Amino acid sequence: MTDDVLVRWLRLAGAAVADARERLTGLDAAIGDGDHGINLDRGFRELLRRLDEGLLGSGPPAAVLEGAGRALIGTVGGASGALYGRGFQRAGAALLAPRGGPAGAPDERSREERAVVAFGAAVDAIAALGHATIGEKTMLDALVPARAAFEAAVGSGATLGAAARRAAEAAEAGAQGTIPLVATKGRASYLGERSIGHLDPGAVSSALLLRALADAATGA
Amino acid sequence: MIALALVGHSGALLHALREMVAQAAPAVAVAIAGGTAAGQLGTSSPGIHEALRAALRASDGEGVVVLFDLGSAALALEMALEELPDVDRALIAVSDGPLVEGAVRAAVEAAGGAPLAQVCAVADGERATAKLPPDWPDRPGGRAVAR
Image 1 (cartoon, rainbow over the protein chains, first blue to last red):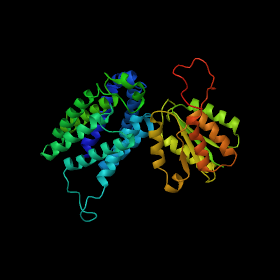
Image 2: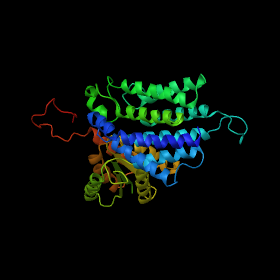
Image 3: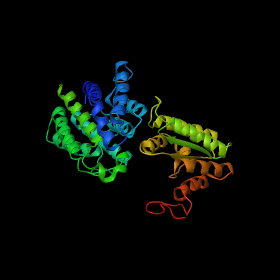
């Protein structure tokens, strides 16, 4: 992934979260504590402020991802900030991880291959920190199928933009698929069976972030 | 002496809880991390990290028992703990006990000079301690916790 795509993604994601702020908060009010949109918007505003002031956005993608994660962790105040923040940080760290070959050798992976590594690390980190898995009415219900779709698309030669569109579609379908699920994680789990019939706000925000990635990577 | 770190969503709640703890055990150091950096309801792993470090310093290396409230508090706490060096992490015990009762109970135990594992164990034990007397009337579904 080039810095341009990455920074454009963060900006589009911030705009998408701001647009969806009331909707996400409404979804969360139905089954949680009603702060998902407010919290995430606060975090992305801070992230955008750091981009605007040049505190974030320069340097290699790994550093930008790490800084984006730090901005969210420090300001969101809910589980979503910790989870997304950790996801961004681990995505950045994965880009720096040893990948065989002599030390200091240039990174010959394509940007698509690097994006697969980063995306996978983010989803793994979110699952580990949340002690959650697919089917529990969480953001993983969007992210896990999105990761699979992204990897499959890259594996069959898709560009970053095309793969991200497939990931966004899979995430949107996964988010819709949370409606009949019973929440067993987070504040929504207090509702038990009364959580059935509602979209999971975290799955919806994950789909928004991936749609923003698809738009950023295709220049939309 | 063992110190306490209290973690939660509300600064107001934790300030008040610290007052309650101080009334029961004035000698015990209590660090709190409640609410976001901007003062809203929520949890903040950087804030929790600072509270853990403050409690460690106050305990003079003896150890810290942590109590926390609901939802994202456990998640943010886990992240804050991961940021500590192993030598500090080993001095911190996280209790699964209820925040209010566990904090007061743990502080009294700490004030008596108990070691880390024992202070944490009494805080954990508050999970199973009945608060209602056995002859409490009109309780739907009977007693939640056996005496």
